[in-house]
Length: 241
Image 1 (cartoon, rainbow, N blue to C red):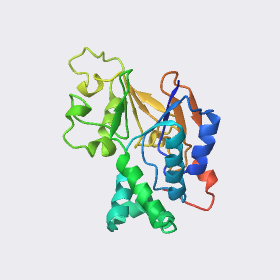
Image 2: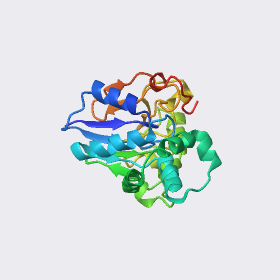
Image 3: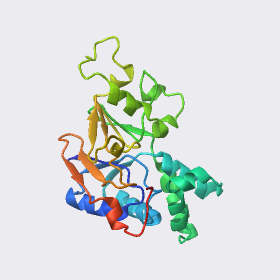
């Protein structure tokens, strides 16, 4: 059984279908989605419908992303959030305007079932963004950190690769898990379009909300599959660009 990790989708259903096909995903695979299922392209409702269906046929773990919480909050309260609207929320609002009440109720159930992190039997940690507590995720004070933090990735990027784990200066956050898989901060910000490793942190967000592809990585072998650049599936849209 493979453990396949899927990066931030941002409503790019067409790209998701393509990359799942390219990875030849089967029912024997465990699929770990790192969050941010919505806010970007026009098929937010269709994306969540697809994931709910996939959950019935495959072994899936769905991690909570910050955009998922923002969208859920809007679905539940109708609260006006101009910053969210500017960063992909407007596309989700337009998509849900065409959805009926039963669909919206089912999607709120999906968002409420999301988990903040997953630790597997190989001591691999999966979460959307990061954590700040030096003792690990179970000691985190603020759960929103799991899907908003960027300092974990920044820390991994700037860490001296020659620094050994036993060194007193080695960041204690990084010693608890053999590997950490995250999304949230597109690697396109450092000029990359494939999953990147820094220290023991793998970043799988390859900029699907912008100009990049959607990526899947095998957590064990590190084989990578990618869709075409997601914007090519939505030629008349801007996504989050």
